[in-house]
Image 1 (cartoon, each protein chain N blue to C red):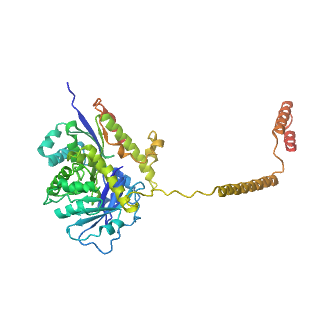
Image 2: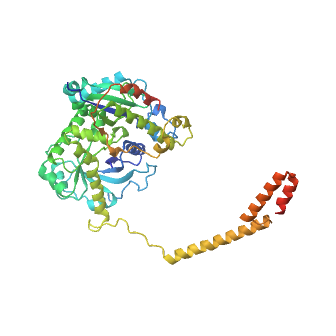
Length: 198
Length: 310
């Protein structure tokens, strides 16, 4: 039997603009501000519904129908503002475009930018990338931290923090496509929860 | 390398530093700040964007200064050479068919950036656009007005105009940039490439539109302004080598100085410690003596006096 081919989009919610109500102090590096936690109203169900609505809005009933059968939010961590979304391989670009056209967080009107950082054929690779990015994030935040806020506790638990710290930014030129369709075991998601702790 | 060649700039906009650091966060390496001129060109065409920006920007983000000139009257003399000398990149935004033709065929510029959110009353013809491409002028598509648009019409027009331009240029010489007035309107380079792919540009062409084509705009503009006849440019003039003698002399001086220092130190040591340094032989001899004494079982006072003597 032919297997269903999917793509897993690793997605980050970025917050480029400050809301005047809770304007953080100047000491917070821009990097930390962009990657702030998502509001608690953002849940997997809300996100899935919002993506369906946006796909329907942009591509009409055709787009919504083509993607909604396979569209699942596999993982969502509001703490790191990261999500993994599964969608059928034939139409993943429609969902990706719909994500690009989102301007606010589903569930609350907070302005945000949805950044697809990885397109993967297997959920495991998406998950590995999520962990790698979360780790890099903490190390970079520590590097830029000028306010003297104690982040040692965070970085202590990260293996290989010594050499990873040199890498200042994940190279975007390397591309986001990783299209190996090898196998897609669904067990990977249990381990995926560990990104929360990183 | 990813390029975003259109970030609107105004002197009192607090959003610009944020937008720049956000673009850097998204993965862009080079960004052009845009100053838009429309109507009659003022007598003083110096660039209002300072070379050293008044706020801190990310270190590895290169910033260019660009001017977008809105063309609406083909009979007007635009003094483009004066304009292009005071900016890094010069872009034209024709609003009428005549102006587009003029911009494509005669006017000296680096980029043609059409307003995609409005419905143009004319068709884009391959013949017109290809004459611009042959002169090395690229066409720009700005995606941000479509993302930030409140009404559907702007978004529809953006997509339809983008598709028409892609068709008329046969997907050659296209540059995609944000044109984002707010940082929320920026998207990551790969998100932009995907959008282009959905609009029918193809992934490879889309990759070129935020990378290679944009780079060629920047480099060609630089060549036009700095080089000799647009052909030869001095990239690195090299530096005059320091004469060899001088170097030796310097070394010699240092040596002498070091010698003097060492000598001084030695003298000071002599003054402080009257006992000279022990030779290896002497050390061995003393060690043997001490060992012998220890085996005999002498008192420690004698040992101390003996070592002090030695």
